[in-house]
Each structure stands twice: as structure tokens, then as C-alpha cells.
Length: 267
Image 1 (cartoon, helix red, strand yellow):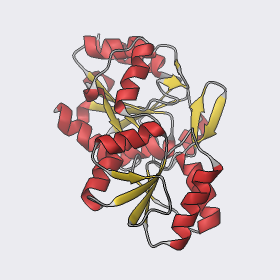
Image 2 (cartoon, rainbow, N blue to C red):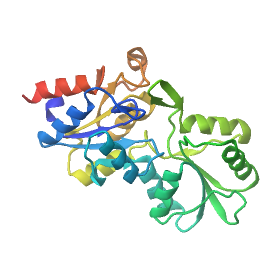
Image 3 (cartoon, rainbow, N blue to C red):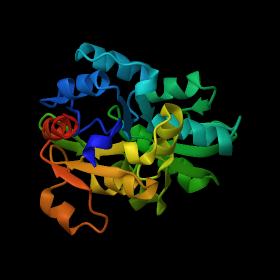
Image 4 (cartoon, rainbow, N blue to C red):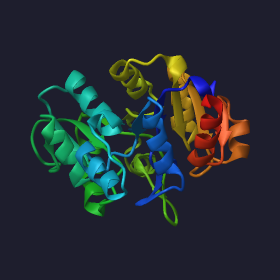
């Protein structure tokens, strides 16, 4: 039930923002979560920005955040690398911000495919993508015995004019050349949800996942045993939601509508 929800786990792209613009009603929703004693955490698969850069991004949009408000695919990837590739050399196809985040967390990173000792390739959503990066990644995956990871399986990222290719699409393109797909770390895997619950001391019954994608956000909720809201402001349509194997608990036009219904339930 909406009235029991205190912890809101929010996707960003297509849910709270489109590109560099807030979706209408997002700011007041976030403000009222705090005003009513709740907490919001962005659980985003978008690894183009570090948490520091996300905090600056939201500050420019007039929204105050701190580190407790973010659990990103970057963070989940760092956690995975520390557990499975500690002190090993990792080749990264990703943005400068993503690479800074890895370096900050003591991950040994290279962008030179000819470096000796590379044990793992990590691919991320990269809005600074070049053909040279793609070619170098193909060279590594074709000629060396390395593990292959990717931050998230999303095919597209919603922006102001529509959509652009996301990490999943980059990996599909690479697969045509190297005949191999990576292990995906972010949503729909439940790790970020479980960590958010631990950090914030809320029960699953008090938690709500809000997102615009069925195969990441909604499926993540199913895997984690947490109720979900699909918002129709991004990728998925209502018809697709109704046909989906793991249907969302709620379907709303946007976070503005969710905000309205939640306020009604707690008043």
C-alpha cells in the first residue's frame, strides 16, 4: 500500500529527468518525501556520472542531495570488482567521469588495450564513445582471455528529444564482432536495492521502486521482493506493461501522479 511507503528507490533517466531537464513534478515529490519523514535514493544504471558529478548535476537543478541519496551502477561495479578482481588491471570503455570514480575507489584502470596484465574488460554507457574505443575493446575480447563485464543492460537512455543508445546497445554491437556478451551488474540484479535497505533501516514493505523500464526497474523489484511503480514518462508503454510477465504493482503517468496518489494515501 502506498501509505506505508517511506523509502523511495528512484530511477533517474525517464523517471526524474530527461537529459538535463527535470520531469514536471519531480522536485516537489522529492521535497515532500523528506518533509514527511521519508528518504529517497537514486538507484540508477547510468554510469556516465560519478556520485560527485550527480550531486553537482542535481544542485544545478535546484535539488539538494548527498552521498546517501545515490546507489549507482558505478558503485555496484566497483563493489563487484573489489570482490572478484581485487588489485587486477581493468580495461574500461566508459566516460572520463566513470573512470575517475573507479580510480577514486582504488580500482586499477587502463584505457590502453595493449597494456600487459589486463584481466577484465568493463563496458559502460559512454556518451563520449569513439570508434577507436570500440575497436580497442574488440581487440581485447578477441585476442586475450579476459573476463567481460558491463555496468547495465539498458538498450536506450531517454533524453530531451527521445532516446539514445545505452550500454546494452553498445554491448549488442560489440557482440556482432566478438560473439560474446558480458555479465551485467546493475538492475535488474537486486544488489542496489538490498544495499539501500541495509543503509536506511527500512523494511521491504516500506519500500517502493519507481522507474520507466520493465526489464530493469520492474524486474529488479521482482527479484528483490519490493513493490514497484512503472511511470510512463520514459521507455515502457502501458500496453507493454500489461503484457509483461512480471507486472508492476502500479502504473502511473509520471512521478507527479505518484506524488499526488501518495499524498492522498497518507493524508
